Amino acid sequence: MNMRLTVKKDNGEWNVKGVNGKVLNWSEVPRELYGALCKLKDYEDICDDPNKLEDMVEIACTADSKKI
Image (spheres, rainbow, N blue to C red):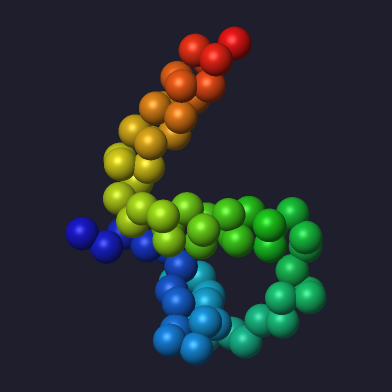
């Protein structure tokens, strides 16, 4: 099940689904929003199922808390 909100082309370019109609220069996007979109893309590269991603984050947080 592919639930991605970002789309990557074979050449490495990427964009957000539903925003294809307007060409957007990334330099015009506020840095905070660009950073959030980059994180979203990276998370989706790791795991395309939000439920699995939540499980992965919970496991990582649990492991970190046991180290303390």
